[in-house]
Image 1: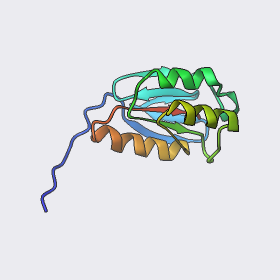
Image 2: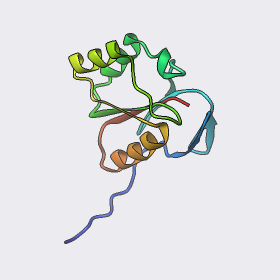
Image 3: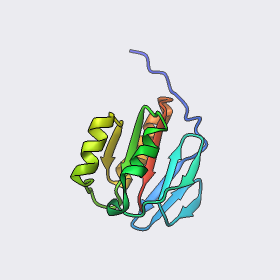
Image 4: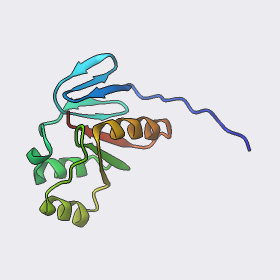
Length: 121
């Protein structure tokens, strides 16, 4: 079996996470961000309880292959009404810890998938 080494062509390298701090491209972030291979912006919600339907609708508009929601140091779940919205709108959202979301993001970028990570610190 042959393996082909694929390089990551993304502009943003998610380097580390500790409670309250993200390091991306050697820059420290202490608030939530929305990152893709070629963009990084502040993301309004600062905790899982601050996520509203309008935030999810904005993610839906991205038309991503997958959107990773990093919920901080611990796994947390969205409110049931938001889970219904995700299901009804077929939003390709995967919820996991921020640390797991960062690793998954890097793998999907190497696969050249259209991926976004909404990372809560």
